Amino acid sequence: MPLDAKSILPARIAVTGGAGFLGSHLCDLLLAEGHEVLCIDNFYTGTRRNIEHLLPNPRFELMRHDVTFPLYIEVDAIYNLACPASPVHYQFDPVQTTKTSVIGAINVLGLAKRLKVPVLQASTSEIYGDPLEHPQTEAYWGNVNTIGPRACYDEGKRCAETLFFDYHRQHKMQIKVARIFNTYGPRMHPNDGRVVSNFVVQALTGQDITIFGDGSQTRSFCYVDDLVDGLFRLMTSPPDVTGPVNLGNPQEFTIAELATEVLDLVGGSSKLVRKPLPQDDPRQRQPDIRLAREKLGWEPAIPLREGLRKTIAYFEALLAEKGRRGAE
Ligand code: NAD
Ligand code: UDP
Image (cartoon, rainbow, N blue to C red; front, side, top):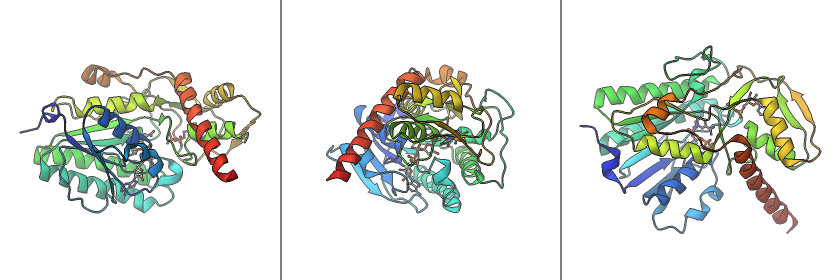
């Protein structure tokens, strides 16, 4: 009998990858909703800084753990976000990336099966690879190179989706799969390598803005507050809503447009420079979010300019703090 996530509120909730960019914002939201949060992270790309403000909260607990090893905890629901998300980081140790996605999913699903609790997977638009259909609906099966440098992440995440649906069919488990499109905001790592953090840090420090390729490739950027609201709505949706469901902002921009927007907001003297386009870099990406609108009543509220302003303010403060510490 599937559990209704709503019936277990307030609850003790595990967030794997909780010290990362998205995970830390999700921990904030869950605590604000009155839950207890168990943050599980091995600090591969996440930092203590992201969750430092939560440590004094008696409803927050931090556990250093690698999800490629089994977990023995007691919780009422699990959000599985553990996995490096930036191409630079997930390609640094590609075997570990696949292990985190696949063995991590098996461990988290095994835990959810024993506990009979709902489990949500942070999947990705990379499932669609370099898409031949545009915009991407959940029905599209994708166009992924199985042996390229992005495959450790793309195929790892695809296999994790397979595992979630097999556990669902075989063990009648309550699963939720979110396909997350490019998300940005405060607490991205300054050396994360993703485009928004790169451009903002480059503009703020007067470095060249590095456009890979001719900048005509597109992405659709979702502000983090919108995204974690979507994850929460998915987890608390009726049991028959398993996904996969796209979560992202359908407003599509070229990378060149993003660079101009960042420069316009930051000002300064940075120049735009071209760098080689990484192998298998998707040409275009835009979510079709009709399913999220219909099933979750969700759509993003924060436009790019507003989200960029908040992100720039965060990095400005971070860089100033680093500067002060350096001067001490
Ligand atoms: P992030 O790198 O900031 O966070 C990932 C977190 O997982 C980090 O805290 C890291 O230390 C932790 N982690 C990595 N391997 C682990 C392991 N083996 N055991 C335990 N913890 C581990 O990235 P993010 O942007 O916050 O992404 C979070 C999740 O959302 C990821 O699963 C990612 O694939 C997915 N996602 C993110 C985006 C995006 O645009 N941010 C897009 C699509 C999917
Ligand atoms: N990109 C860029 N300059 C950078 C970093 C990224 O032009 O300094 C491009 C990258 O080639 C890709 C897009 O921006 O086309 C988004 O890259 P990101 O790594 O943020 O995410 P993903 O490719 O996984 O969507």
